[in-house]
Image (tube, rainbow, N blue to C red; front, side, top):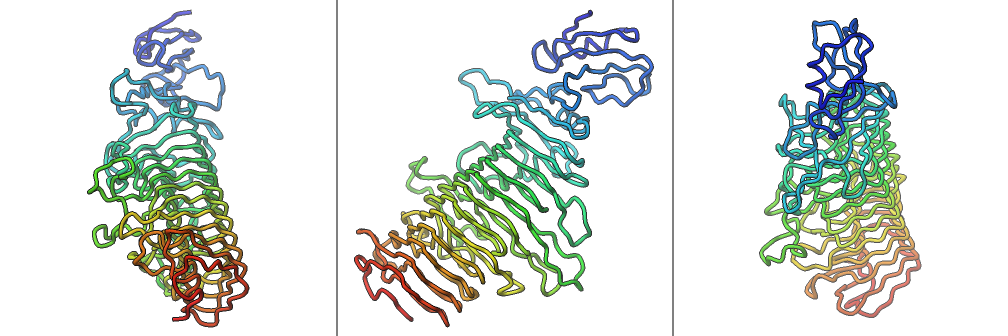
Length: 521
């Protein structure tokens, strides 16, 4: 058997039909792109640069011997993973060559020499300037990173405003596991400096006013320094066991505009399961002084300065869009957001509340801002802008929520902000720099039961805070426990500015509440 060093040497041979050649590497021996190739002198199929090699317009092809017929490796197509070479073309050709129901393997990138900048990534770019680096427009393929932990293979982009990987057209039933997506700035806690998207799910079917059923999975991936970790126009997606670090939005669910103004349509975002993920430093405006000690560095959201970043959150659901019929809205649910861990972030959830469950999440040391009147809390439950009270059948239960204790004047928003209708807030454990649970004027028929609200008003002795601040109408409040610790400043356990509110039996420990336990303005 003939042996050659690389693909260039293979293509320089003058073979006979049936010849088998061992290639030691794609570029250099041992780089993972080598293998066994068999020559077929009569073949005229289109070469793809990885599993089929040859010259277009000339008969004869080298065919790679595949150990597993349904699997391809990006190194077979020339990807280097050295953090310097642009690997976009090689990876795209591998994606295009993956067989039906097949698997694309992405091994760990090369190790940089000790003492140099880390380069554990494959560099990608938007070569044709369409906003997307890599594109999958097919169904039922798996993109799988074969490393783990810090050896996870990363795809990184240095261009601003681009998408690393997009699923478009007929894409559905796909999966991405064990791959890192790194944005256009190096990891330095600067959430606002990032402008790119990790994974985009575009509409993949249906009519102009309907989101597509994507039926896909994203598991054990890393999303770092991105505007949007995952931007989803679609339904039926499982997002499980991923890490989102320094992203403006970890997951953003986005409806499509209703293109027919005569149609009153509800665009349904349903079947989305966001489970067991970690969201770390998501939505931050600037550097975190816990890690960067400069006293002038700001790490909270200030609407007077930051303007239109009120949607920055670990999970954000766009509530509406411009245009469409008068009753157009995002119809959210049924969806599941459960067992996630979110820390040192600006908000955990912002979105409409409908047919969904937010449960079992640990939300620790998030930063909230009451000056942001739309989304002031760690968890923000919104109604539809066009259809007030068109929400229902939702629950927020069993979460542990700790809002930052209030190191600045902009850190005393509530743990839960509710402006929705017909749902339940149950069994949560809450501590907060500001109010514990607060309601907006559009809220209606919400049951608040069995929560432990403690140590609210940590921000300042000069504020006016409450464990539960009611507005709206027709709520039921019962079986909650409200208590304060020394060094916290709550005026009241309950402030009731709502109408037709039923306040049942609650357990209120009077110590450290400064005024009436229940106040009716």
